[in-house]
Structure formats: C-alpha cells, structure tokens
Image (cartoon, rainbow, N blue to C red; front, side, top):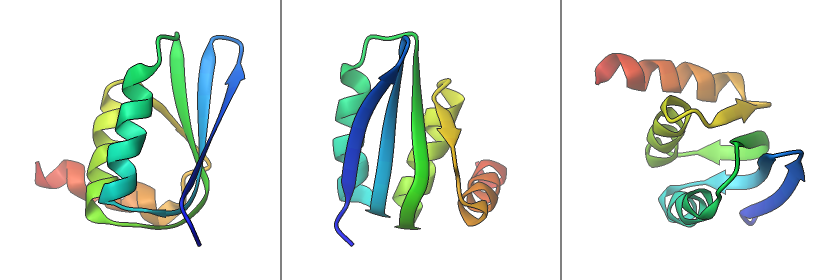
Length: 88
C-alpha cells in the first residue's frame, strides 16, 4: 500500500491521518510537515498504518514527547514505543 498523509483541522488542532507503511523516508516528509505547522496542537492518526519500521517508532516517541498527540495507535506500535523508551 502506498504511503499517504491527509491533513485536516479540528479547531486549532491539525490532524495528520497516516496510511500505508511508515518508514524512514516517510518520517522525513512527515517531520517537514509537522515542523511547518503553527497551531495549538498536532495529532497523528495512525488508524490506517499497515507497518512501521524502527525509525518511525523513534519518530513517534520523540513526537509524543514534544506534545504531539497519537490517536488510533495500533497496540504493537505502543508496545514498541515503550520498548524504545526503556532502551534510551
């Protein structure tokens, strides 16, 4: 499945809905989009993610630590994020 990023707004919050495989190449593009936003909040909706690599998991850990919200996050991603936090 090709990777896709959809942007929407709910009030002052930007929601990026991600679909497909989330890997290092897509993380780089997503980072640029996130850095361009000047809003009160950003949420990443991971409902349609089919697969993630380690680079993506590390990005999500840092994003969450920066206050970016995660919604519809697959259990395996949450588990992997916890492991990454424990190894730092």
